[in-house]
Length: 334
Image (cartoon, rainbow, N blue to C red; front, side, top):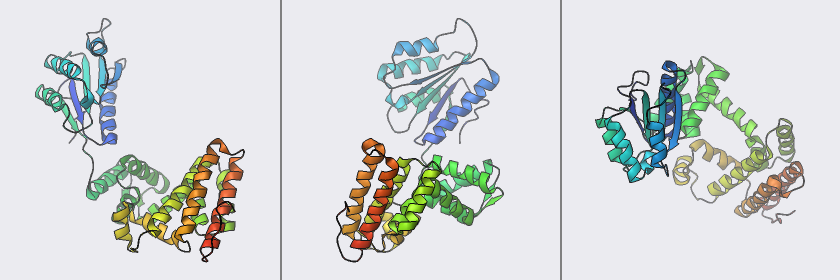
């Protein structure tokens, strides 16, 4: 469990673990606690890799002007031997007017520094990677509760399946769900949330393209452009959809669970790709991948008009599906 950031056991603190979001929150909590008690505190944030000992000594030295200071040294697992020794030496006699936080990203490197700090009485915030689905589900429930809502078990599972191990993504989704739907979040709310997100990021365009809906594709594309969706995001969504459909179609298994394990994708994404790959041949998908690659370059400056490049690519991919899906072959430039 994280140590109490408001009443630390000493002016020394260790934040350790592989989970970036939890590390950031732990450091943020200490910063907030220090500034709540010392509004004019100086804050110094340093990266350990390549940090000169002299610079560290300067920020740790007693201030000529008084006042409290907060010093955060991140990535101490990368600290050179001399820097690590300097930090260990400081920990033996810390300045009472300075809060020093060392952040270790996990692993075995420079464990001696962490042990020296904890032996000196440093408070410890452990931020391990949440590797199990159960841990991530508990994280989602806590995020929703912190935002003032409740979430059903099926909604938790749907959210974890959709987003996976990305805690920032899970946290953002939990907060947005409470903001959008309030009260109790159920499976239907999660499904509606993802549908809305897809529209905003351009995946609706990609879905219509892969299903071969020419009119629907053009309509969704123009709607997305009118709403201000970035050209690059739409192009990326089309490329991701085509590549995912190709990966799913290239395997002999049709079992979503088995495919999810093989491809390391969320089951919902596999099922969606299976639907979108129907009516496509492998040859057609390979041609579509080529069109998507050209589109990527076009929207990043190769084309005179990104709007035109997107519409042209949409029409080409839909044509490829129509022709190759019937057993024919069409050149990707058609």
